[in-house]
Image (cartoon, helix red, strand yellow):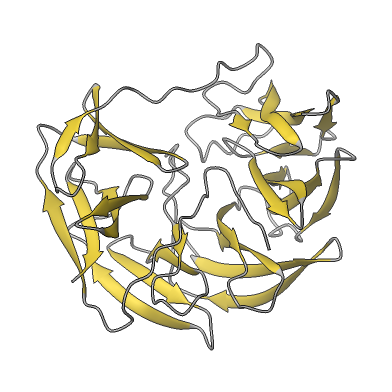
Length: 321
């Protein structure tokens, strides 16, 4: 099953199941403030400058800033447009509104609509009623069985967040999870893959990553979402942050199935979770401080490793030995 998800992208890399995982500090010239992931390109912001890891060396070398498409005038400020490779050419959050006063992503301006430009020339939008907003920074493209779908967080003003899957052909919401049930209760997607190995695509999300921290797997089949797994003690966001990518999907144990790396609820441990043949921790890697940036995957010594910034400004390299 072909699967590609923007921002929540995953790169397959295989490691021995018995390997020992560790977190090392990569020297930097200043405080790490962000990690930007664009496909396989991973850039690290240190103060005002951008860097990347040198090939096969745990040291930073200068890099150009991320090259982002210019946002249209109607776009949500400080959001991110996605550029697709199949049916969807571009999509972005639009129609800024202040009708929802949550502010979990750093301000109280959310999106009232989602704009979709297709490669066949069609252009349209999904506009929400006044009882809801898109409480997100960027939509995500998921290509499933040759069709593009868009995954985004929809929040009801009085019932909190739900995960919405949008039909990019008909430009309608095809399905959504039940909202959490109260205002100002939010969720954050963590990955899209066939995690449990049953042949259908799963969408991983973290329900209330600040206070509850429950990982949920929702299976997408026949235009319906069905919850299949719940796991406690995870988080992939902190209040006010614009970083939503505190997770990474890959085959970490070499069994041919995608796994999920995501911090614990206190963000002091990186959990690498497998789902087949049963749910288990492949590894728990202690971090020197709370994770605060997106996670990126890099190549080091011929192997793939993960990098992230922590709250004291250091850059952490997470790898198996």
